[in-house]
Image (cartoon, rainbow, N blue to C red; front, top):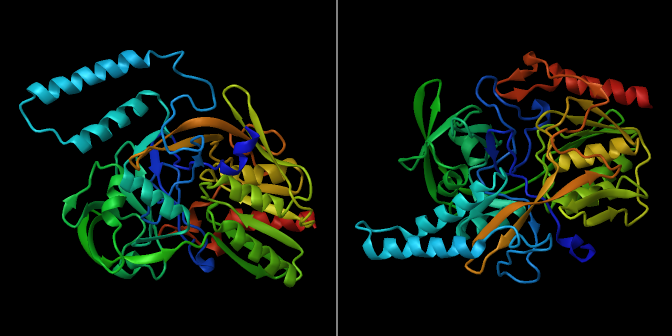
Length: 435
């Protein structure tokens, strides 16, 4: 398993039992704080999405793009009678081909078959992606996409797709979209009840093309017209406040370690005496990025490890002696998940940082994404991961050292205002006590 270490990353489509989300863009400007849910509207976990099908994944296909049903975690063929299932499926398709009166949409049929198989596993992170969707995921993972620049979420009970955050100067914000807007149509096509990835595919498009999005706001339907743009994802925002480096980490993507390194260097150049890492509503991301960033803070030791169902284990340890020997605080909330939990939990395990906020989401599993020969892909859970200190966060989350809920009056127009933010204030108080 050691030889596959460089290929391991996470799939961060999170759900708080009933929520499905997608990926990423730059956080709200510093003066406004971080994006939050609108009370009474949103109930799930945010994966700060920017109308892009971005997926963080563990790519594992034994050196080939061909589907291998046994993988490395043991053969499932010994447990399931695949031959019988395949034969029965073949017979059904043959009967439809010969006798079914109506025409069959073959692409839709194929997609539904794969969706149904994965749904039957009970794995809420499992999914089938068409060639187009898989291509979009890979593009998003690299840190840029062509869209309207709006963070969205889907509630899996109501299937409503809701705008979490229209990013400043992006097409959505310029067209007047606001947090809490419910997407109901794209270019006149009703998307109510549609899966989030399918709706996102309709909203995305070529640079410079026009898209009309109809939203529901306070019971009124509003049509917004915008022009798609290439938007580069900035996942790290930072500033010096007095002698403290404040770093907001939006997610852990391919470009995040480089942006994070610049933040740390900026702090050193300005003689920082402590760091506050704001990981609230951070959904996680690529495991190698998390490991790389922890390696910049910890001089020696185990950073993260993963195990498969047979107990096979891969360790991720520090590779250089670079470290930051300063007081640190990790600010988290109930929407901080996966990679954000590994980051904060490992620093907490080593006694290098205090965690402030509320218990995190609790996602401690990794998904395998297997590309198929036609360009499509399957994704399903294959590994569990642990913090550097061996903490199992799956279903448990990271428990803060200082528990502070978010005060309701801090939320204004869907955003948390820094000056009213009790969690932010508590992070500062904790850091001062550590100095």
